Amino acid sequence: MFLHFLQQKEHKESFLELANIVANADGFVNLKEKGGLRMIAAELDLPAAAATSRSIADILGCVQDERVQHIFLVEILLLCYADGDFNDDEKEVIMEMKRRFNISDEKYEAFKEWVIQLDKLKIEGVKLILDMP
Image 1 (cartoon, rainbow, N blue to C red):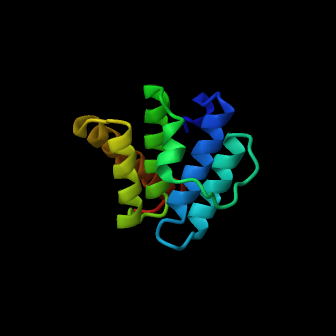
Image 2 (cartoon, rainbow, N blue to C red; image 1 turned 90 degrees about the vertical axis):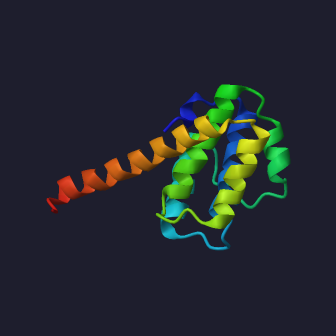
């Protein structure tokens, strides 16, 4: 959704690496997550990435700009909610991002609530399209 704002190749590659870590956090990448990763790679105009050997700390270390940090956090939250299961392993990665980016509790909660509301709107849209009660 906001990945088109990433202009530096290093940021794009780092985000794709991080997205792969998050998708694999629980040891299983389901179909929605696989689709999400393909869409992310396409939006970033990068080939689908293989597993990374870099740590989360190394990946996040290249991101100093606050707006880019916010894009990373929101997009990773969107990926976490894509399969409807925001599990403990994914939460751990999100909390590490929050700490490393020095994001306040208030700002984090605002981002998370926005992502949850967006997810609800998507569900409502599907129901409208399929004419479901």
